[in-house]
Length: 111
Image (cartoon, rainbow, N blue to C red):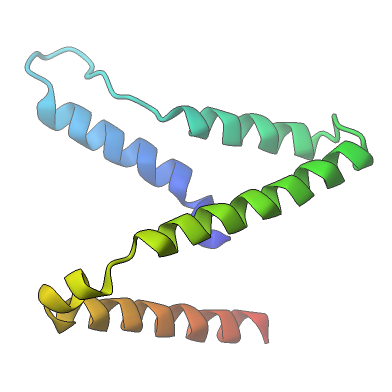
């Protein structure tokens, strides 16, 4: 959840950084903000101000769980272990270290 929380600010910072880098004039650079960021902010405000009934909120939460499962499965189906082995064990090592670090942090902060 913390990783998702920092997604918005990180995307804004990276967009500004690359906007300044690619800017050819002295004017304020133009940068794109992905549309889902606006949706995320909108629904965060809606939820914090209790603008939806609890039944609708529960329905949205249930739907989002199924959509998350579908998204994770589609990501998993695109993983090619043969390509990972082809490009070396460094990819697997980095993925394994990232996974272990996430598990350690979850155990550290949950308990």
